[in-house]
Amino acid sequence: MKSAFRNAVALRTLPHYHFINPHFHSLPRFSVAAVSSPPSSLVSPSKPETFRFRRRSSPLRVRYSSMTGGETDAPASMEKQFEDFRVKLDEAGSLRERIRAVVNEIESITRLMHASLLHVHQSRPLSEVLEKPKAQVDGLKELYGRLAEVLCECPGEYYRFHNDWRSETQTVVSLLAFMHWLETGKLLMHTEAEEKLGMNQAEFALDIEDYLIGLCFLSNEMPRYVVNQVLAGNYDCPRKVLRFLTDLHAAFRMLNLRNDFLRKKFDSLKYDLKRVEEVYYDMKIRHLANGDSAEDNGTQGQS
Amino acid sequence: MASKSKTHRLHQLSGTALQSIAKRPRTITTESYMKDAFANYAGYLNELNEKRERVVKASRDITINSKKVIFQVHRISRDNKEEVLKKAEADLVAVKDQYISRLVKELQGTDFWKLRRAYSPGVQEYVEAATFCKFCRTGTLLDLEELNAGLLPLSDPAIEPLQINVLDYLLGLADLTGELMRLAIGRISDGELDFAEKICRFSRDIYRELTLVVPLMDNNSDMKTKMDTMLQSVLKIENACLSVHVRGSEYTLLGSSDPSFLMGVPDMQS
Image (cartoon, rainbow over all chains, first blue to last red; front, side, top):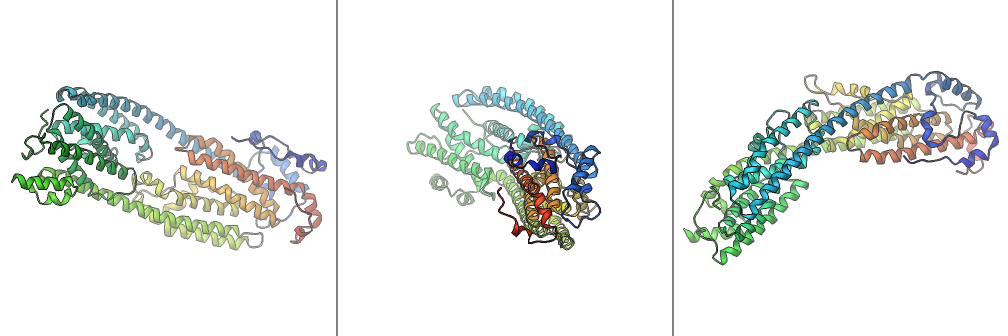
């Protein structure tokens, strides 16, 4: 708190001042709490509508007596109200801490999953890459269950604390979608994602915007994946990824977005698509892509 | 067949994916699941954004009209207190009935917290106006319970009533001290020194109470800046009252009801 001192010069240069207002102590700023404020009702008794001048003496007498006496209504009810606020806000604060604790655990699992999934860039066999992350999905589901329990204690306040787990959830969605795509070549649906995380309860659902942003994070991984797959000799990959991203981009174009974070992420999707197109085109013109006219319908990736 | 598909591929590459896909039924079957799903998401987002817009518009209306109430209260003086307050209170009720009522149906359920950033400024301004009126009327702080009780009639008893939450109330209260400061300075120049001192004590109380509560608030960075401004306001009020005290004996010598007394007083050094 900034400390601010009165201009003490004014006090010192007027010796008679102390006489007139002996109650006025030149207290430093921080002990302002010690100065009890006399209740307003005593100073202007029965005629609230006329704020006349008072002779200096009478307010003084009143102030003295009120300082020794008890407080009347105004400050006491104010104190009580603020005490209630303190209690309520304290509770919300401790709730928030518990949420943060669960979110930290979620974050450490997602870090592990992400690290395991990064093996896919090193052309390990798919089943091996996916083994560990799949096992950890259950752990995630359990953590989200705990989050739901914590939130049960404050019904209707899902969005009050939403920002505390928002970005972690978006990362989780992107990881799950990536795993799903690697396995099936298809896009993970919102309802499927909810199921995997146990977030399909009435009060605790997966926010759609979080889901969509998670999909955009998924697309951010694609260009690098394509490049590494081609390096590893999988010339089939770019076509499949290109089709997938084109479809995804077309689907996203159906949305009307505001100029918010989701829109920025959607814009980045375009650049990912462009990058994959470039890789595919480079391969195409050098006739590296084999059997490109065969219309595969998004079946399993043959690495 | 192969060449046709090649030209369509090129179309895809140039980015007009949507149109080319329409010419290729095979692609529609593979990605129709995506399109159906996204059609739903589009509907959801449209609804959400439209609701958000309505809430923002209501919030702006609340803000403007609450500000008018505040300016009305600033016109108060010892002569016209009753009529000024009467009009202000009537206007405040009108704000509540006409504008806040629009928020009631929009903020049902989880939207209350989801859309908070959209309506919070308006609600804060309303809190400021309501507490300002109440203080000028009774010298006490309008507490949140009472304020919210006034909002209950707006909502259908069957649904969740719209209630102002603690955070918006405290933010509005923080702005109140700024208006109190202006009022105090204004009243001092009109010679209403007791009223100014009342304001001084009141704003001290608010500031003191808030210092204990602010650290506990969610996302309290804007509240922290408000606290700094509030301290400045409280200091201004106190210093203004100080000047009056210091020259207090001079005022009483010149008499109470003569408005021109200020002309005779030598230049005040702040």
